[in-house]
Image 1 (cartoon, rainbow, N blue to C red):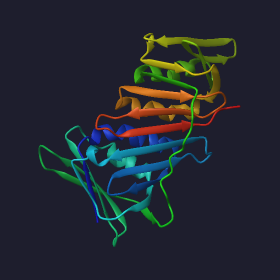
Image 2 (image 1 turned 60 degrees about the vertical axis):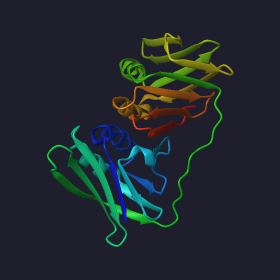
Image 3 (image 1 turned 120 degrees about the vertical axis):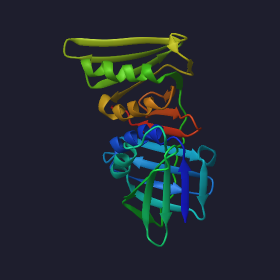
Length: 249
């Protein structure tokens, strides 16, 4: 039997929105130490990894490790119904093989219970990519969101270029051009450039990463020349959502 209770259901909807934008389904891993998830886009361009340690939960009871293929589109629709007073309760009975998702109002005690399609997977293993990056930066999520929104006005390909003390974002379109030069303190929180690097990504592949900006204050951005872009969001209770986007070359 699995039962976990998460106290910030209304914040978690930003996570499920991001995951649902990548794929309608993904693999959720319940272990005695954490809840994790792997989600890969059908075109294999974008991957998301969610890690929620036991300390993120108000209650965490997992008797045995289990991997479930979960319909994220269904889960997202349920969690969209959450208010700021709701706890999110996930329960899975290994005999019934159905994931129960409940929203429990802490003030009134009202419990709304839903069932989300899920399938147990015997062979699935949690995978986390290992990569070395030549550029690492940190910025406020509002600034990252502005990059994606600004790009919509100009074109579909976003180019990130790092020099000694500067991160440059450029987008080109027909007779249009966008450029933002960012430095540490203006507006970057942190910038480390081990070597000059440049890589391009489609705006569409990065749009899913604008969803967690509602729950996280900052985002860590890492890349190398013609290498996947890593975006790491740390949520209020210590959860991490890491997203990878393949370069457009």
